[in-house]
Amino acid sequence: MQLDRVVSVMGNTIQHGHSSNRAYLLKLGGSPDIAARSLSDIAVAEGYSKVIAKVPETMLDAFTAQSFEEEARVPDMYAHKGDGVFVARYFEPERRNESLETTFESVRALAEEKANNISKNLPEGYTITTLKKNDIPEMINVFQQVFKKYPFPVHDAAFIEQTMLEETYYFGVHFREQLVAVSSAEVDASMGNAEMTDFATLPPHRGNGLASCLLTEMESYMRTMGIKTAYTIARAVSPGMNITFARAGYRYCGRLPNNTCIAEGIESMNVWSKAL
Ligand SMILES: CC(C)(COP(=O)(O)OP(=O)(O)OC[C@H]1O[C@@H](n2cnc3c(N)ncnc32)[C@H](O)[C@@H]1OP(=O)(O)O)[C@@H](O)C(=O)NCCC(=O)NCCS
Image (cartoon, rainbow, N blue to C red):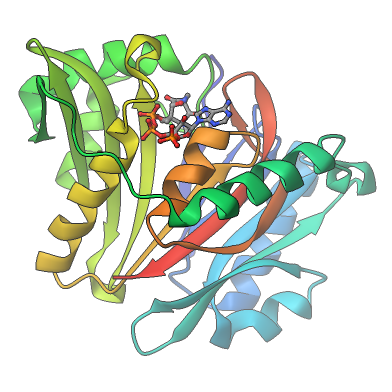
């Protein structure tokens, strides 16, 4: 698997690579004008067809001035700085075209239809815990079975260990002492938000409500940490993932067309969020 690189450019954290064929501003650290220019420069140098940034709404003008357009908006993502906006610029117009648009709309409609259904309780025999360094080999086993491709190197022990040291909290479900489902909350404590991510349930255990139970558990953990806003970037094609978030009270915030290399290839992603 070809891995994306995460680099720091003038204080901005940027992930980029040929698998997702894009550059992504993960965290704005410096001037928004410079960040927007750096993304475009990287795209031109590497031949990427899309660049995307996650930024406070107060920085939006700097990006739109450089031909970026808003794709999704998370209300109150940044403490004291308002909404978080996903802005993108395309270097090849066809990258925007979504051949599965009708599927995405029906997945979203199904998720919203099921939003009021009651979540299942954790079935008998299953337990949820936080995951620590000694769980990493089993976590890798789950990620390897579930994801052929993934935007971050979750098949690499050193990477997972590093993220554990940098405010990513992993949770898991065990059945008969075997880890069968994983998720994580990637926390930005200074901004009061967390990305609920890395959901993976082993195929024989799917449909038992494990993803929903993990999400509920992570939300209560986040509340105790004072996190105010939870959001996710979910595969637009996945009924299970979109249903999980809609049912937990998350609101749809927009779609990122052909954005992320995950599972089989580059996929569109739905953004959902919730005030905790
Ligand atoms: C997405 C995923 C984590 C969901 O895990 P899970 O533990 O099975 O989820 P849950 O059982 O909590 O709930 C999923 C809901 O979606 C429904 N669902 C799942 N697949 C479905 C499908 N193809 N069509 C309709 N409904 C579907 C389930 O029936 C369940 O609803 P219900 O409670 O009304 O029966 C799991 O399918 C998975 O690992 N997928 C591959 C990895 C992935 O895509 N991760 C997400 C990355 S963004």
